[in-house]
Structures are given as structure tokens and as C-alpha cells.
Length: 357
Image (cartoon, rainbow, N blue to C red; front, side):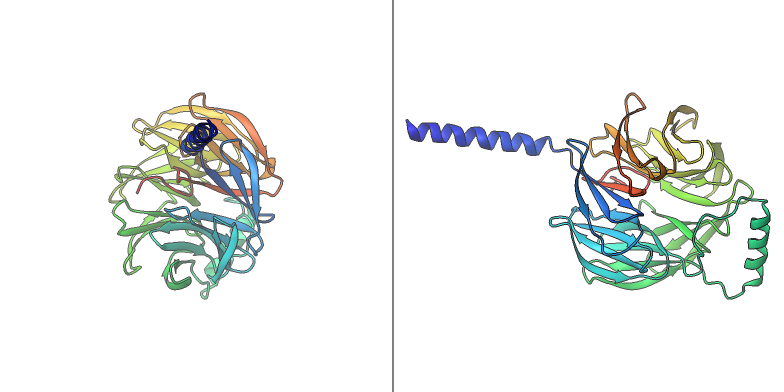
């Protein structure tokens, strides 16, 4: 009798454990410019842990396909911290270069944009006296270094080579076939396409006639379309797979983060000064809805089950949770550390990552 009870109890315990594992919604990782990475339990939408990244002003953040390593760019020491997600401990720091910002991972390589000539802070508004002075200074500065994308071999734990971008390289994306690297260069208003194998510049798309300061860049799930947000154009640019400009789409003020949903049916744009997350039909480009959000909302991710979107709103001290059916904010997760970027594991669609292999 006792043995039977023990067997039943064990079976029930195992069943509950399997069910709990089956319904585990995963974790989100939020980089905070005022320090560290916050781990959010997506089952409860509560902060489960804080990770000391051993560097100041974390921004760019990415996670490997197997979820074992988190890579975070730390601006002040010009490095990336590589974190073991099983222990939430930094296992390596790799020097990249001055002012590292974006991080994307492809296979066992991390691609990190950094800006040797960047002065920090937002650029002046177009047409302002500050902007004219900055343009004159740049024209006279023949020695200004272009931005670069440092490539880190995560197996070796070191930077192995670099690709030269334009002035102040911002967003990073990969072509669907993995042969090309696409970057936005905000200071000279270009999108550049490079060979992943050699780093050679293959094509330059000038955005000034459409809008200034390209920032976010995203490829469609089928690989046939590229989108780039033009922060000072209040638009996003639509290009075909050969990077021919097809059209622009008007957005709210200062668009930044951009992403498709998993099916490629909708486009989501974080419009900073408009304080909205904007939703568009990916075929017609008609706007579906403006979702009111908060202050300095730049980057976002879907949850692994696609039921919600997490939006990092740095100056609202919060990560917004948005229901993807209702298209409205349903709750806020307090974060007073100036949240910058957010990714999940299992991997999801978002402005800084993709679930499409």
C-alpha cells in the first residue's frame, strides 16, 4: 500500500513537472543603461533576477540560438560582456572598441557596431544652428573614423575581424541567406550592404531624399523586403531584396525600433516622440492602429508565444506589456534603470532579434 502510494505520488509529481515545463513561457532580458540586465519571468511578468554585466551603460543585447549565452554591449568600457544564462554570471569580456551599441548574433558569431568618432548624446535637430555647426565640423574633419562592426567568435571568446561601416553605424540586419550584412548609418544618412564573408561594401542606399537618420533595419520573414526607419523623416523606407527603394510609409514622430510579426503579416514601429507603437498591414502598408505607450520607447520584442509584446520605455521607468490581439497596453513592469533593449528566450521576433532561422 505504501509502495503504491509512493508510486502514485511520484507519477503525479512528474506529470505536474512536465506540465509546468510545457507551459513555461520563457524569459525576457532587458538591458538597462543605468546598470545591468533585468531578467523577467514571462510566466508571472515579474523581475526574476538582476545580472551584473561588469560594465557601465549596457545597451545592445542578444542571445544565442540555444539560449546559453547572452551578449551585452557596455558603452563605457568599450566591451561586450558574455553571460552564462544558467548562472547569470559574466564568463568573458571582449574588448570591441569605443562606444559599442548594437549586438546581433548569427551562429556562433556576435556582430557589434561601435563608433570611434561618436561624441555621445542625440544629434541636433535638422536645420538647427547646432546641426549646421556639426555639419561644418564634420566637413572639415578629414580624420574622422568611420564606425565599424566588430565580429566576435563566441567559441574562441575574442574579436576576430571588423567590417567598416559609415559614420555612426546604428542598426544591424542579416539577409535571409546569411550572405549579406545590412547596416544603417545615421550620420551620413545611408544604408550599406556588405559581404558577410569579406566585409566588402556591396551597395550604398542614400536616404536623404526620403528622410534623415536611418536607425532601425529589418528583413521580412520571407527575405524579400527590407524596412529602415528614418528617425528625422518620420517614415520607414521599403526596399526589395536587391535594395531598390520601393516606397516610404509615414509614421509618427521619430520612429526607431521596427519588426515584423512571425507570419510577416504585420509591421510594428516604435515611434519615440509620438509615444506610440504603430501597427501596419505588411502588404498594403496601411496603418492598423496607434497604441499609446510612454516616453523613450525604442526597442521591443514579442513573447515566444506571440501573445504579447514587451516594449522598453526608458523614460517611463517601465517595460510595457501589449496584448497582440487587443493591441493595447495591459500592464507595466516597473524598471527605474532606464531600460534600452529587450530580447527573449526562446527567441522571438522583435526590433533586436528574430525567431526566423
